[in-house]
Image 1 (cartoon, rainbow over the protein chains, first blue to last red):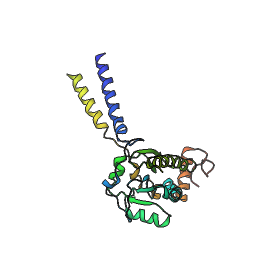
Image 2 (cartoon, rainbow over the protein chains, first blue to last red):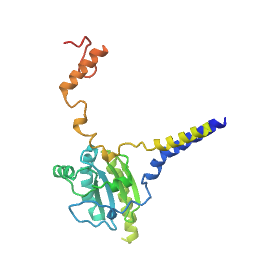
Image 3 (tube, helix red, strand yellow):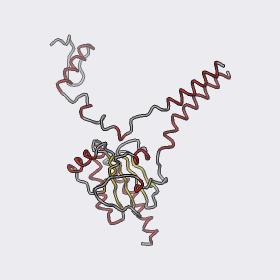
Image 4 (cartoon, chains in turn orange, purple):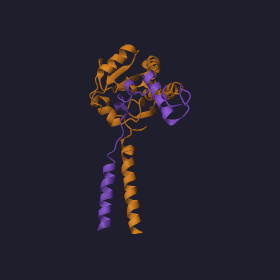
Length: 174
Length: 72
């Protein structure tokens, strides 16, 4: 009987270990998003993200839903650029050439950074591509969007962005 | 003593098993490549289907119908 109890304990211990990596690594809503300036992210243009509302989208050139998201992200960037919203596309391609080839073929009106070392994406440990985060000016994650749905994702983005914009304008007394 | 050894073995093996990791989403570019698709060549796909339905004596799914020896 005692022997059985011990075996049950070992199995329980194993299960805890197996799920521990899932539980601790994920970045969730209301936690702080890592500061992008602390990572080596390659870009062709200079950028200043201080005090801005960020929509950070992780994408790759071989990922078709990521490609589908581009027109929506372009639209949002155009609509919200005056409201202190910046869209940052973090490219996770192995090779920067693939990213450049993709960007030549597809229209992209927002800031794109290449995570060559994969430090940022590993830290965040996303479970699917595309995954996007809407981040408040203080760095706190407002919402996480996994995958892309043509019908719902844009609406979800807009709801979160509008919420942050109204909070921001109240703070600034506008 | 034997029980203790079994327990130690199970504990160590359980810790080592947690080392199994899945392919990360950003590492799936090779898997997403066109050359990884099994149906990229229509002719090869048709032949494979033909051999499959002949071997299994099944009426073909996909676009191929009928059974037979597979010799035609």
